[in-house]
Length: 281
Image (cartoon, rainbow, N blue to C red):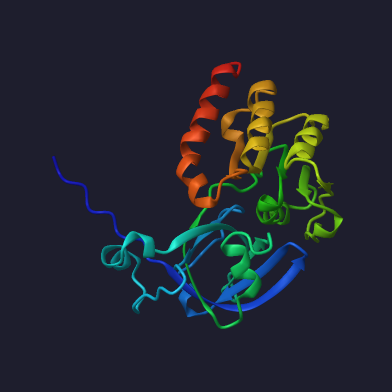
């Protein structure tokens, strides 16, 4: 039996910060550019994402940056950690990559970095990944998510042709967090205030009078409400699994390292439980 060829190591992209912008009190935009993006492309999916690489404080790596070599030569606690962010926009002509970051003050890693980073600084990242874009063959589209899904929902809405039927629900902390989206779809902005994350989204989607025809849905954000909406769509309304892009971007009480370690198993368990009760279509 022939041996499989060794998997070619993925090479990180290297870019420079071109400019930054505070979009709302809790959303920061960082635009990347530079020659290191010559081989980057994110023109297929509206949920394309990249994994930013952050080294621990006080640790520097030899140039040229080689992630495989770092993992061979450095102790594990000095390896870069990753943080995943959706591509808000990819400008093919100018080769500029736009990422939006939710800010929680000094909490977290990527948010504080985005708030203080300056033009000219170097950023390294892996990707892009991605799997969803609105299906033009669908009769209508449902998009629902919290702040973490806002960039992907906005990118999806802006990709829809004029006249496309779509219902979009975005939950944010308050009216000051609403953003301008270049789309003729009327977004329903839900202001959470002190209510649990996602509670308003579940209520709003359940209250929606679903149009006739084939639905293509995108539901992402905090894992608990995503689970509830998946149950609604897949189990109660019998939407075919292939017409759903549903996944938890994050989970209350977990940082990204902890959530990513458990996410695949958690999603598989939820899917198995719900598929077991989903009527045959």
